[in-house]
Length: 278
Image (tube, rainbow, N blue to C red; front, side):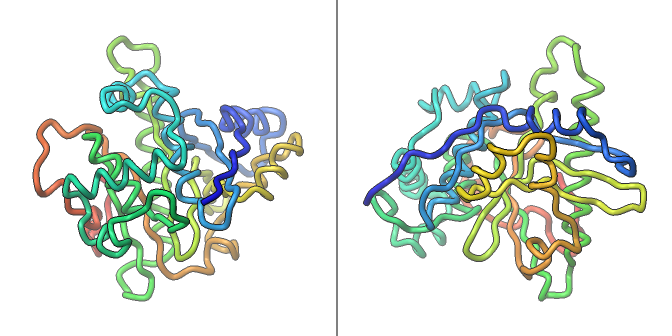
């Protein structure tokens, strides 16, 4: 298996925020965005999940929090390589995490070009005693729709960013000031949600970062309108063309105090139809 080095754009959220500072849209009411992360671009047609994992882990390592301390305790001091991630996911299966997902992939990832999804991300993080969760959104089942998912994502960023703002500068509150990005999975591809906007007409738009190399180069070369590359709403074809999504996210209580067999089972944490982020 040949693995190419990813294009890495450091602290991509800072570039996004700068674009707003330079030209704040007239009808934009509010904006919430996650803590800084480094963007790792997709280099092959199957490695989007791994590159998104690297970007997510960069946000954890960039911020002084118990999540970073737990990664350090688990031996993750720098961004793992793609093959390192494959080994760690396999080790999570060996420990008993997400046996159904492991079975679907024959419990083998290392040195293969198999795709991974949200449950593999969550399995690896839980094996490090980090309380990652999965939320399922199936629009075909009649229990929710795209508007519901977008609203829940908005509420996630609103609640956590407001808490970050209220605790800014207070001692002993570094963990609450960290806002993690969301891992967005659909059939055949995954992306990251960096934040959300609310407009004067009530529309909510998500800031979605696509790891595909073409998009990364486009972002890297353009100046002043970076946010337009990321912005997607309910009416955007790239978002409304799918009928099922999974979102991986960190729970507010980010660590497991005691490992249990229940934590090894990956289930929908939102419990449709009573949709509410924990």
